Every structure is written in C-alpha cells, then in structure tokens.
Image (tube, rainbow, N blue to C red):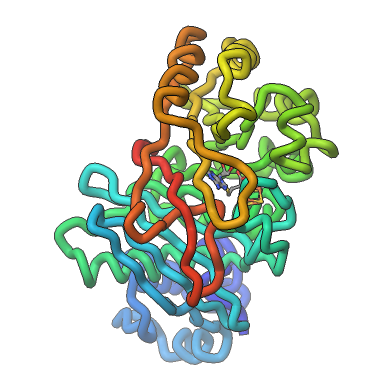
Length: 358
Ligand code: SAH
Ligand code: SF4
C-alpha cells in the first residue's frame, strides 16, 4: 500500500495512467481529500467502480493522530501528534490577525545539537515522511474548522518546529509541492517558509530542486567563532561557505531572505555584535528576525533584558535592514517550535514564534 498523502498530483496522475484509469480520477481524489478535506472514503459520484477497487487496494490513507491539544487564551494551539510508530511531534497554530500560521515539524528530534535548542538536546530519532508532514497540516486544519469555524484559515506555513528541514530534504520538498499545488492545498508559495541551520547538502539542492518557497537562515551570530558555539554544524559548514549559496537563491520581487538571530544575554547581544550583524547583511535582500532566547530547564543561555533587545534592534536598523523582534505567543501554554518537547507528560517548551510572519 502506498501512503496517499505522500503523492504529488503528478505522481497520482501517473499511477492512474498506468492503471488505465480515467485522468479525472486523480482530480476527484485530490479534490476530495485536499480541497474538501474529507477523511472518509472518496465518495465523488463519478468515480468508476474500477477506480474504487484500485484505490482500496493501492492506497493507505493513515494520518498522524492528535494525541493532545493545548489552547492558550491568545488562541495559540499546540498539538502533540502521534505517529504510526508511537513517536510524537509537535505542531503549533499561531494566531495572526484573525488567521493562523502553522508551525510544522520535519523530524523526530534533530541531529544538529544546537546548544540553545531543546529539540537538539534530545538527539535525532528519525525523519518524518511526507504524509506525516501533510498530516500535521490536515489534522490542524480540520481541528480548526471544527473548533473555530469563524476563523479557520491557515495562511502561512513555517518549518520551524522540531527538526532540520533540509536534513529531510525530499520529504519537505514533496510536502511543499503538495501544499502549493493548485490541485492540492493551493497555498501561495511565498506563504511557506523553511528555516535551516545551514545544512549545506540541502542548501546546495535548493536552487534546482525546491519549489519557490521562502528561506530563513538561522544565523544567530555574525562570526564563525560565536556561531559555532551555538550551532556546532557551523564547524563543518562555516559562514563563508553557506552565505554565498543562500545569496544565490533567486528572490522574486518583494521577497527577502529571513535571517533569524537568537539573542542570548552577554554572548551575542552587545552593540559590537549588532554592528557586525548589520555589516554582514547590509547589502543583501535581508530581513532580520530577532528571537530572544527562550529558556528551558538546564539551558546554559539567558534571555537579554528588553532594553538590550531594543538597543540591538536599533543598531541593526541603522544599516537599513528591516528588523523584527519576535513577540511571544502562547506563553500561557508555553507553545513554541524549535525546542519542542516530544513527551506528552512533560510539555515544557518555550515560545519564540513570530507573530508577524507574512
Ligand atoms: N532546524 C531549523 C528549524 C527549526 S528551529 C533551524 O534551526 O532553523 C526554528 C527556530 O527556532 C530556529 O531559528 C532556532 O534557532 C530557534 N530556536 C530553537 N531553540 C530556541 C530557543 N530556546 N529560544 C529561541 N529560539 C530557539
Ligand atoms: Fe535542530 Fe534547529 Fe534545534 Fe538546531 S535549532 S537543534 S537545527 S531544530
């Protein structure tokens, strides 16, 4: 059995052709499962009985299950999704002007071991399959439509949950294709953002292989020496290697590369650090997201004071780079991505998600 939600529209068309089914079969199926977001067996009335037989014997429609939901008064929703093998990942809905940004996980755990990240501290368990990425979206969307029918629109998707998306390139790519497919979920490509710690093998494939979605680079420091202390991967793939590759990714009109900069007290939040960041990015089509560190038990870093964050922002802005401090959402339930915990018993996470992703 082939997981249905792992197939792009083109994949499905090809399979239908090979099985000698009417080309419209793929349309009926995508329409039923993606446009109508139904979970039961496809009841499109013009589906032939041969097609029904084929569907029944060929496809597995299993999706992750919602194991646990936490809602905060600011309308943030955190889901713990249970996967077929018992592993769990978190998916977060972040409210923004009456709509939602959905933060997706791409792996169970993460191999990159960043020193400030709760997910990294848990180590790498496995990649998510395409259908598990799509499943996070469908489960969250169906939940939203049932629970909050008046405002159930997911406008943006960010791959900023657990895992390094470019380490799981093929599944993230295929899921993005399904998200933006006119026959599938029909999201605009510029509404999807993939955040990376700078995983070179994935960056090298981006230009040729990735659909035209946004890239966000977790920069966090303007020098290799400091960056490597936050992101060990920087020792293998230093700034002078990854930045030119990010620069070479074509950006359409009004499109920017987002550079995420984690602010930690006394380490990378000084005025020198801010000037170094401004100088590094000043001639790029850049947009900076300053992310104050969110502490978790046992973490060695500290969040800077608000005044320090503001001063840092002002210096960076003096280089004419649009800069945003990510406001905290879901603080009440400690919902967030990036340092999410996979255990339902211990939901300790922290909030650093953007309120203003557009
Ligand atoms: N692996 C990818 C995407 C997931 S992490 C990446 O690293 O970019 C998403 C974002 O959350 C990253 O910018 C990451 O640096 C940030 N993050 C992780 N732990 C954090 C913490 N404790 N406080 C604030 N931001 C954190
Ligand atoms: Fe992985 Fe991103 Fe966390 Fe680093 S910050 S350990 S790359 S999830």
